[in-house]
Length: 230
Image (tube, rainbow, N blue to C red; front, side, top):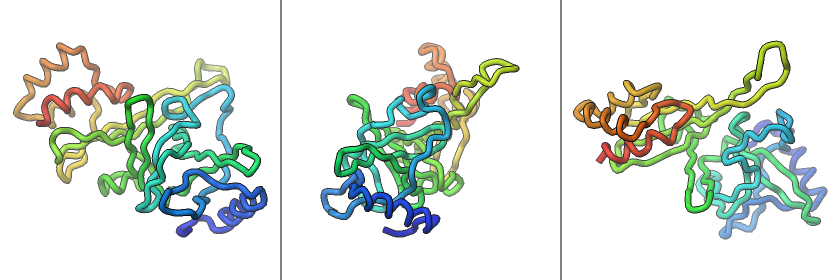
């Protein structure tokens, strides 16, 4: 265990976990050492009222890449509002505990839902201009030099003026990595610039499929990239 910040908080977590004789998920099949590297999860919102987790699930199955080691079949959730990865820990009496993983050592993770696998990678492992403390959903295209990345996040918005009630709405940021270029995608014009020789074909495809190019619908761009990046 290394690269823990801050050290006193980490020591507090270790003492707490040892005192309950707990063990932490995930556990590598190649390593018998428990993965205990994070801080106690303290929700920033009323979780009984609002669910801000990716796929609406705090206890999702997936894989975690800690440093260079993959931990398979882990149970965790990705909070889109706080940008935290919360891991389920079990005590010897099967009581649930949750810790937030240390971003300094969490390089990537995958979440599974039915037959779909969602890949997330730490920003600085994708492009030097992306944040090293944010995780971006990565989609590969038929062109190995063209990658689609999305910073999936939520922001809090008041439901109406003069009240304290609020809701969470998407505040995603879309990017194309083309070679060494990082290209923000804010609308159709930005997407068309990726395919300068195929603008008419891309426009016709968008129109025929009634595709909306918007940060609210990040998955809508994927069929376009798969059709025109080969």
